Image 1 (cartoon, rainbow, N blue to C red):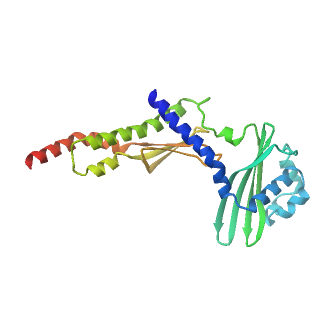
Image 2 (tube, rainbow, N blue to C red):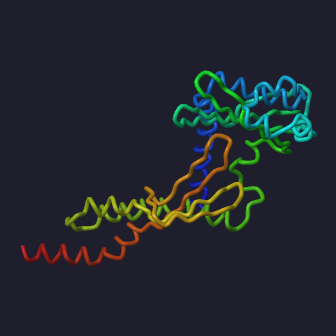
Image 3 (tube, rainbow, N blue to C red):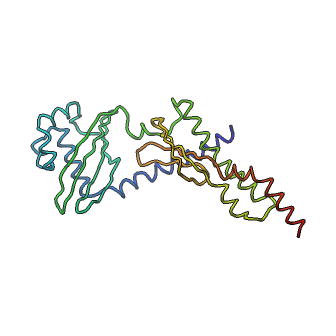
Length: 262
């Protein structure tokens, strides 16, 4: 229980630090003036200003959708002034002479959230909207993807315990290796005890697990999350630590035999 509490404290600190750096990361990767162009297109769409929106669309998108279709897709979108608006996702891709920008905004309308994304294709100095998507949500993306133990099932608890136990086990065996009386390849064995192989990545929000057989992790565990995205726990088999414990007696016996022979 003490081990679990210590592990949760470490994760809580990690989550807190990530929250402080999240906005800075988003701002760093948000493209300008493309982000402002994306917001204008989203606002024109949700407010029903289709005459203003259409000139911003790429030729391909403009040919695919009519004003009626755009209006139908925007039914239910709030048209008032939001309490707040923020960028929650921004990526940039380069391909030949084309740049693609994906920008996602989150609007807060007094407890209802409107999440909308725009795809911008830019060739030279000409940028056009190549895609629009929007949906209403009952929670903010920060709430949806929060690292919380509330309403989590057995698989969540199992993965959390493994994510805490794996690095502790690796570090414990590392200390045992350092204190074990043998010299042959000791440094390599000590480093090997910290390596985990074959990783299960677990999405904390959805509960989905993916297995990556060819993978390596330091301390056999990891946590990662993109800004406003789900937390991903990675747990590996502490192969190096297990192999050392299996070979420990033989290594000590060989060291004693070599010492006696000398």
